[in-house]
Image (cartoon, rainbow, N blue to C red; front, side, top):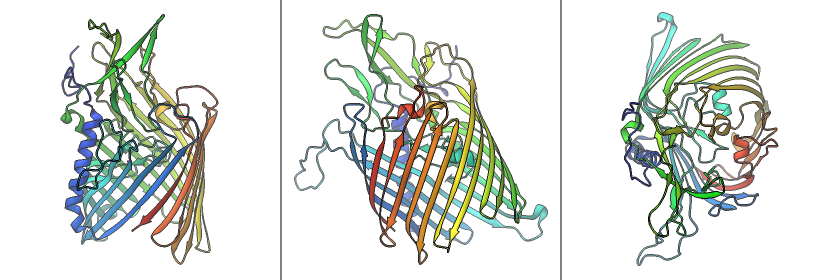
Length: 510
């Protein structure tokens, strides 16, 4: 079977090299370089920085995970306008320090010495960084065109409201170091946004691909038996088995990651288009259709199924299982159709979507770690927005989703990852209640309540969070997340059912 280097680049004997490492180095360098060039011209900034603490209730799942975490979180956004030009950059960073540091300082320096094996959880994301130009058309132009906006860079557009709400991440890639609260990152390329009086058309084309950002993990070595395994101190690391039983024998598993060519990962084509039309007035009827063709945001991996058992001839070395993972590029076609109605604070949305994966066969001797399944859904939203004396504002929303998974049958039934384990809810209902109270035009407190219930799991996810602002700049906040699932199945809720936690934060906005 022929297998091109564009699809995968094998370099045997490499440890500790992976797509994750390349991706993180690239996004860090991109963030720093964009900040350096953009900072001098940005005239409007909006940022938050806060200290956050998390306490998990259930017992520890792995030896290096913790019951309590402390992190420093920063969300920075800047924008500058010059006539028809707009420059914008948005960066998000969160660091979880490793309290296993030795408290020893270099002579003449306040920086602590780093010990070998420190497990920082450091995350950096660049949701948007772009420059755009807007051209205003003269009145009474053909088709009543009002403006054309051309954007170059990374920008977040909404292609499907259902995808945004349920957090599928089919269109925009997600930052998922905490999968309960992911946020969107933009596509990278050129955007064309053409607007009329009662319609808008968006088109995107790009050559650079950045996938979902996941939990930081690394390969570690067991000093007792010399085996290598994936590990992370994050509570959101799903984990992989370290041993496998074959009959009466129990074998250790050694994990490896193949080095991936940077160009093969980053430079992949993407296209998307969206058309929206509306009636205007009260009530306002609207309809939107979006179609896209691009690499999948949740990367695929393949693992070896031949030459798995390794018999060591060295003294003291035992027979072990060698499991090698490699990045494998896959593309898909996305389609979304939505119909909506807005009338005096009440809105109704009906959405259908289809995600078709272009199937590929793994190279000889390899198999997929994740199922190649297609995904289609139907979702309905009913929302009511309220405002009392222009001080208490918010909305209540009911949501419903029903989905279907299909695709090529897999000979190997050992898959642990599917859409059901990546998405919080694929068949169920949701309820949201958001409120904020303003005084003198300034937000004093804000709360958010959400409950998602999964019919197949017979359980759900409850989240409650809020902020209280002492002044225009200082605030405190907190929240609670509770997960539950009665039925045992390979799903998101079952993966993380032992991660109920509460959090607090103290911050400053500027």
